[in-house]
Image 1 (cartoon, one colour):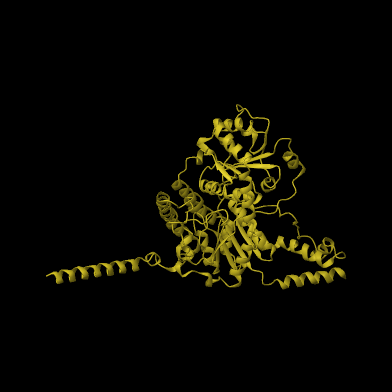
Image 2 (spheres, rainbow, N blue to C red):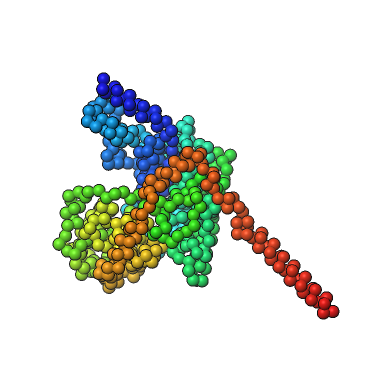
Length: 544
């Protein structure tokens, strides 16, 4: 009797959440760091009661901690609920908390893109990326992770079936990166579109919502500052060049692929991009130079960061040391530090052996050349729980490639950084950290025992770096809502207001010459020249 009564309460709870939205997320870039942000947002939306479908290359067979998977094929749900929940002790609290977790498994549905593209995770050699120019990076973004990723993922059974389905959605969430082809799903289902930028705002993203990107003072994605004349000139060239290369490498082919998939009556991707309801960008003003933001540009830097968990006994033992502390080293989820040139690795080893610290290095020791002399104070692990390690009180220094997510985690935990940027935005991320006084850069081609030692000792021995890191952490955390809750609020805002068109800046719809007052400047110039000619003419008449 009690069981059926509480089952009635649960069903009432379900009915009361009929306002739950159907949300489709498309994460077609085959990078785990990109998907990490998608996953954080969409899982929280599922927890909030929304029905989420996420197309991804990283299908997980595991639920988040605290969630359990059940097979209902041969079980009576009523009986399972009666057995699972504690109906007698703190009844409603138990139902309220546990049932939300229970519902999650129905509301988060993964659409597999596995096999369509090679995954960019712990499989890239330093030799592939160490000499890439900004133009090479844009080509990689727009061709490999843009047009090619678009074409191949649209051929997957998951997305082919999605196009054939009769399911109704209320919102589509895509990513702004190398191609806009997935915006077609917003048009196909006739729903608003939100775009997620997993980095700072990309050069080709601002104009679609009319956000200022004036290179006189706003650094572009591929440049870290805009101060003196030379910097402003370089910043302007890089901004214009990156926009041109995106259009040249991606736009035309992406439109062809999208129209072939969604139908020839689909508007151009450029027009669909102009209809973007909201852009969520993985940036935050306290760790990057402040940029002006229109109402539908939301900064959620650090959205992926969760509260550190209790470390396993194994890692807790690793972090226990009789030295002065721990130096944690990782080169991220893409580039293998094992692929570093042998002489660079040996120089780093020779530097670390002279420091009275234990070094935890994310790498596979078996893949390192046997000829290298590895000090006893260096310990290798193939994987480590990064946020838990960085926030551990014994960790004194973070040696990093300068990835944005890693940088945000180090700021969150208040740990100084020794940056060895390899490619893309990593250089700008480390430059920004240097300006904050929380990092020192050592370029890959400059790696030597002396330079690593000098940088590490300064970061470890000068208390200013730790003080600056702790101040940066306080500023980063001091927000009215957590980054994830902020993102969820604005996603639900767009759903509630059916696209929230009132957030849109009219500047997004202006032609370039109107936006930059080209027509006004022409009129003023003509007026000035006319006035000048009249004055000269009158002077000539008076004289003669």
